[in-house]
Image (cartoon, rainbow, N blue to C red):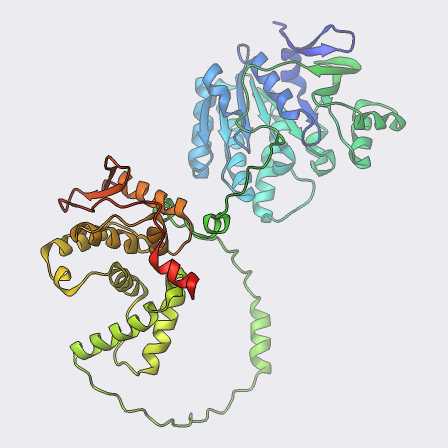
Length: 507
């Protein structure tokens, strides 16, 4: 059965037809620089041929997953083992289901291995399931590079072998390769040479224009035309398209990619507290899991090099280290040591600028002062220092610190990240003492910033966590209530200046 799908319009306005049955036997190569409309062309081809043939899309950027909404393609996440991907590909062929293998989020080597495992699974299907499949590979130069790059040789051979099988031996197994590349010079020649149909888009480099002209059977002097092609315009040649080179304008598509070309937008007006907004972390950042940085594994040194280095080196004569005079250790009781620790912390926190220094900087200052006073025992940890600092900055007195209500406050603060405990404890102390609600400036200073906007976001964050309830009285003054404490602050003005800040400015 001959099925001609509409790819767009020819120069004269006639419909540009592509013979799907012929394409399955002869394969297709699409070339075009970034922004030439290459992905748009592939989407048009997939949408028009979806009712007629099973499709498999190797999608390195996750742009084609939107086909699942309208055409029912199954989206396969590439973050699986090679055995899982091979098994899924085999079942895809047996059940004749169209799918999109999305490799978004994987590094280049992982993408190559995942694509190779999936293609090999399609290729190794039993003969009973060799139904026709249109296999579309976007950014094919990544999976069939002409030269080795930064990936391991094993991954390159595995990926290149799978792509070669697809283009050279896939036809007898019903696999019709449609490969798209930004640069012909980067694509392995034995892969590109197996295609009999070509759609060449805009390109600028001489070597790519010359190869495109050779593939289309054009004079090299005519290769300059590829520089003048507009976005979405291609030159077509091949038994499934045309027996002579014809310009084609690709038609519209029904679905859209998740990513699009960037558009110019005016910059917003920079807020006055832009530095605080940039350099002060958001509360939400503390809930995000830390991602370990992958470091490349160093290549093992040859054994011969290690032996040669050992043979050249002469063992150094071990000299006893000179003995140093020992400093007598002063024995202190636990109460005396705690008193001295609090004295050191008070010295640090009495500095008005300490509120705007990071906990790490204050902690280093604390360790230096503790060593200078020769405090015995292991130093307190950074988390313990942050906890003590937060309690000290809250301003709680000895009577309130000994109460059951303050013990409840400390228990609630365990669910708050270290950097937010100072603000939480200060607000709770104000509620237990029936004090006016702290202003935005006071909350911002407790968090180590000058940004009033950041202070309001902190209150919103605490309210989202169910720790506080913020409301106003009839005069518009703010009240912060703590449901777990059955206490709330008295009304206070959010715009009131911070007394400590005013003192610093005066000095």
